[in-house]
Image (cartoon, rainbow, N blue to C red; front, side, top):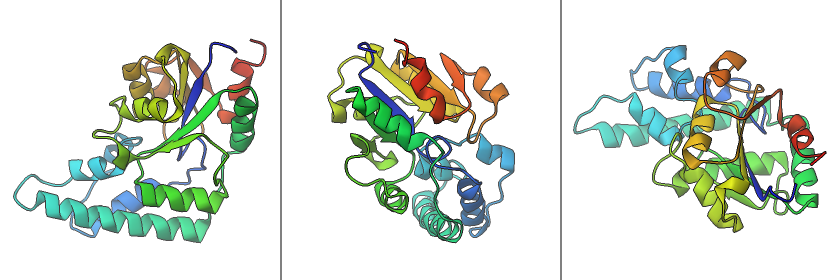
Length: 223
């Protein structure tokens, strides 16, 4: 346990229940601007920066930047409506995992492809206010989202963690695990509670696959 310094958790699908709100908001925002995408295409960008992922589907041209901002604003509105209608629920055991780690002097960070405002709304709805984690890093805090490692590096910077060999990364998508691999973390943990299934995560570099974050503590409870 002394070797573990920081655990970086993804948000939607990893620590927050995912009932399809994000892909539904993606589809609605794009469709509202005449852009049709398949479920498989959206699935391939799960875990990415939401702004960058949406721009991926917008045709190149002089209007791309403007249209990308309009689509992103529409996505945020659709997502807020869906979360308001269905409520926001934590993955069972997530908050307990945070407490278990922090009680043992392990720092905890959340990282997400959502922007800061959307993240704040989610955390507020969950009641995850100051003190439940040590840092929150959002998609608009870094120059590139996953699979780039910068969300993890920014979480390390924010919490004072110095070595990737003492960092764990936890996520539910292949991009989460690719980011962990690119960051060089010692523990790169996939969870089966969100966007991607066992087959997809098994095909991506990882150190562990767990049913959910509720099982994270058992990796170190005997250490």
